[in-house]
Image 1: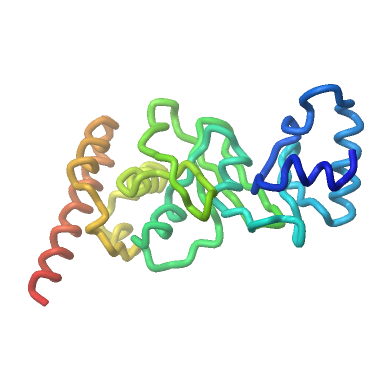
Image 2: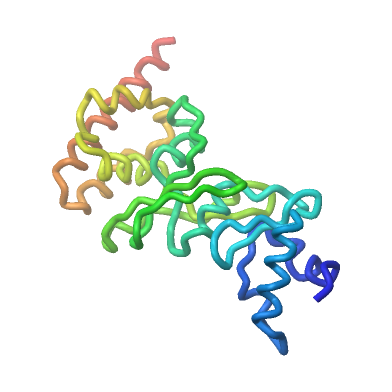
Length: 213
């Protein structure tokens, strides 16, 4: 396959898998050899086995980190600090993109950044939606309420007033307090119910402060 033909196939994909190139009458070994050569030549970035992205100047748009995260571990969604920062609910910049998966936990270092995956039980894998995180780039991201509860779920003493204060939560008007309470109650975990109550109190306090301004 010529590189120009290859670009016609994957040019619009921010991240692609080897399987995209194996349809039709092709030799899988030849495709993998070509991908290896183009990676060594700096035309591609290999993110993990079977997952690639075009390198500059060939990429039409830089892949959004959340799109990369979804591609690295299928069936995962972005959550925890990464999602809270995306919603503007914590002040810190988070260079590490954190996701939730029912698979093995792990961390990936790639040319496009660092990505961490945290394990949860199957029954806790919900509360996310598909968002357009960049122009025509879509990723699965936890809703704000679930991102906060995922963090509490996975953080020792995550429901403590001290830890919640250390997060320096802001823009709490983005929280749907009814949904937050439903998610916490549905978990059947006292820790999450306590955290939901404390977060709701912080949200109401923040709203009251704005009303007095």
